[in-house]
Amino acid sequence: MNRRAWLLILPFLGTLIVPLYDRSEPALWGFPFFYWYLFAWIPLASLLTFAVYRGMRK
Image (cartoon, one colour):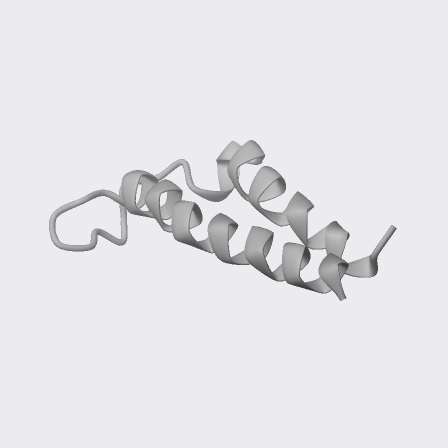
């Protein structure tokens, strides 16, 4: 198993540990931290998945 595969655990841990983002400040464009933190994980998880995929193909 490739060492890059461990990167796939980051989105899981980042959204699993709720006390990290269970607050409303700082707000971004009127959205509480809770929402934009979770929405930020969507493209980040996609990029991490792509990086792992590219690393395993080589």
